[in-house]
Amino acid sequence: MQAKGQKRFSKGLTLLASYTWSKTIDIISDGEQSPLNPYDLNYNRGVADFNIPHNFTLSGTYSLPVGRGRALLSGGPALVDKLFGGWQLGGIFLGRSGLPFTVTQQQGVLSTGTGNRPDRLRSGVLKNPTVDRWFDLSAFQPTRENTATYGDAGRNILMGPRQIQVDLNLTKMTSINDRVTHELRWEVFNALNRPQFANPGSVIGTGSAGVISALLFQTPMRQMQLAMKMNF
Image (tube, rainbow, N blue to C red; front, side, top):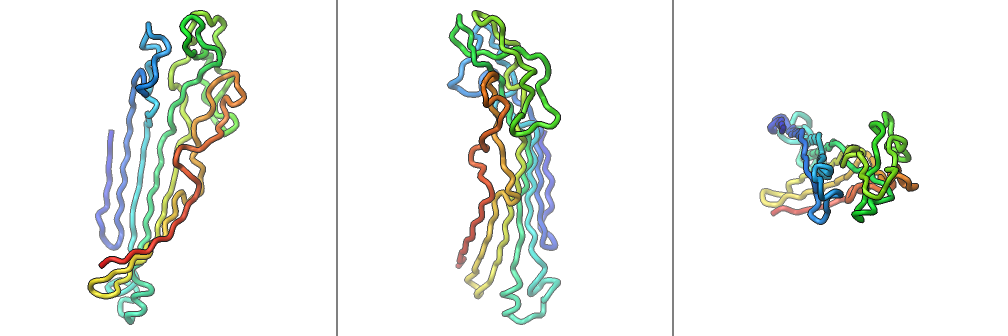
């Protein structure tokens, strides 16, 4: 399901919101992977590695009502207009579900040489997960017989941390004359300085199981940049 709401530019404000609700199911998400049990492909059936059930974005810009032709200081001299007019605020909010992950075990299936998943005793989802304990390790038990026994825990049954990020920008447009415009732009990425955590370690029996020790790829902490541009 996809939904979009838009406020067209009026009174200095424009907004655009979009929401997607989806579910993707497959057997293998990566072409280089192979199913654990080649004799039962449905054993690997589950939500895709890239499945994101909820995805919401909101973006907008607001031109401050200051300067010539605006509500404030509209009758001021040219210098006042160049200093206080032409300011614009903008931002993007992103909120989406985390990525799924599969709980595995250290010991593979001896007769096939493949990896294996443990047996699932209960949900494994914690009400208040932390980066040090993201899921219930006691909800999974290694298979007792590893010669030809596959665990019953499904593929991609748990979800990683959700992603929430806010980017902001402040722009100053100054008209030099009828043909030349100067633009000064300050941008702040991840303005809240919120860490976007990757999925936890998911191999039970190891010290990293249930522990989040990395950030999502290409999601750094707060970054700022200043840029200037001449349009003519």
